[in-house]
Length: 608
Ligand code: G6P
Image 1 (spheres, protein in one colour):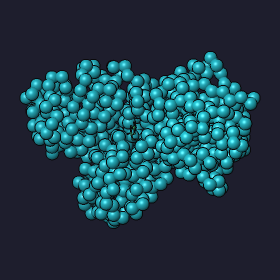
Image 2: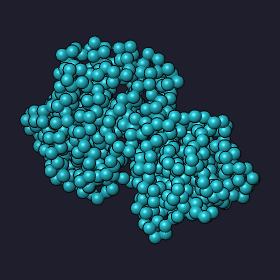
Image 3: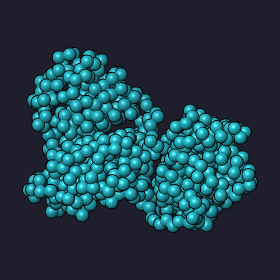
C-alpha cells in the first residue's frame, strides 16, 4: 500500500517525483524517499513521516539527475524510520517496492550466509540484494531482473534503477497496480494514473506477471520468462480531476460537502429522470436470470454492501451472501454459476477484494464491480462495471464514496426488483422520485446540522468509548459511524444491531459511554426506542439521531437529539450518513488529529 513513481526524463526529475508522491500519499505516509542518477552517481534523500519532511530535506540538499524513482511508505516490515525508508540501495542498484515479499526471511538468510550485509529491516531489501548479487556475478541487468522475479514470492509492484544504466528504469508487477505513462521524449511509471496526471494522460496498465523496461523513447513489456507481450495504451481521465481542498480545511470536509453534487451525478448515470425509469443498459447484470448475489468488500465499502443486502433482499427478493473480503476469499463457500458476484471498492485495488473476485471468477460467476476508479484492476477484471462517479476521494476516511456506493446499490436494487417483477412500474417511479430528491435534502441537512455537530463534538471528544446502535439499514450505518469515529479521532467505538444490546454491550453502559442511536421513524422505530429505554434505565447517555417524526414520538431524555427531515426509508441511509460523518469529522478536528491522514491507516490497501 505504498506509492511508487519513476521518471526517465529529459531534465531534473526530483521535484516532479515529489509532486507525484503528493498524489500518492493516500497510499501511505510513514516515510518518503527519492533517488536519482547524476553524472554516474546514484544519490537519495529519505525522511521519516509525512512528505513535507522529505521536501524540507530536498530543499536543503537538492538532488540533480534526469532519471529517478521515489516512494511513499505504509510500513509492513520494519519500523517507519529513515533506515527502512525506500529507495533501498545495494551496490549501484536502487529499488522501490509496494507490496510484501513473502519469502523474504528465507532469501535474507540465504543472502546473509553468502556474506550480504543488510542495512534495513525491510522485506524489500532482499530484492536489491539479489539484484546486486546477480550483477556482481556478471549477469546483465535485464536477465538479473528476470532471475530475481523468479526467486521472489508475494505481492509486489517494483521499480528498479541501475547506476550503470542511467537511461533505463525497470519495473515489474505481481499484485499491486502499476501504470506506465508515455511522455514526449520521457517516460513515467506510477502506482496509478492520478500520480502521473500532471505529466501525461497516455497510460499503459501493466498486468500481473509483467516486466517492463523503460527508456526515454518508450517501454518494452515482457513476461517473467522474458517473452515480449503487448499491452494497450489508453487515454486516462485522471488529469481532469482537480485535487485540492478548495475553501475547506481538510479533504474530508470538502468531500462531505461535495456529496449532494456527486450523488446527483452518480444517480443520473443509473436513472433516467425524464421518464422516471432505471436505465437498464447501466445495470449490466441480468438480475432476472440469477439465483442470488455474492457480495464482498472491505472497510466502508463492506458496510455499503451490507446496506445493499437489505435492499436487494427486500426490493428484489434476491438472496445476498455478504462477507468482508479477507474472510470471503478463504471461506471456501459453495458458489454456483447461477449466482452473480458483486465487489464494492472505492479504489478498485484492495488486495482481498480482488482475490475474492478471482475466486468467484474461477467458480464461473458473472462479476460486477461497484468502483470509483474505472481504470482499476477490479474494474478491468469484471464483466460489468458500475461506476460510483464520486471523483477522487483523498481523505483516508471514506465519506462521499460511501454515499455514492449506496446510491448506486439502491439504483441496482431497484433495477433488479423491476427485472424480477417484484417492483411495479408505479413503485419504480415512486422510488426514483425519492432518489431524485436526495441531493437537495442532503444539501439542506448539511447546512442545518453543521453548527450542532460542531458543538456536540466538543462533548464527544471527552469520552474514551462510544457505542452506536441501529436496526435494519441503520445497523450497518451504526457500524459505519463507529468506524468513522475510531479511524480519525482514535476514540474507541463499536457499532451494534440495537437488538443485540442486551446480549452483551449492555454490560458496558454507564455515564462514561455515550450511546449514539440512529433511528429514523421507520418500521423499526418502536423497537429501537425500547432499546434506548434499556440504555436510559441504566444511566446511559444517549445521542439520538432521528427525524422530525421520531423526535416528536420520543420523550426520553437525551444528551443531544439531532433532528433530520422526514424522508422515505429508501434514502434514509444516505441522509443519516451525514450526521455520523460530520460528528466524527468535528470530533477529530477538535481533538487535533490528522484528519485526512490518520495514523497507521492508508486509503488503498494492496496487501493482505
Ligand atoms: C481502507 C480505507 C477505507 C476503505 C477500505 C476499502 O481501509 O481506509 O476507507 O473503505 O480500505 O477500500 P476500497 O478502496 O476497496 O473501497
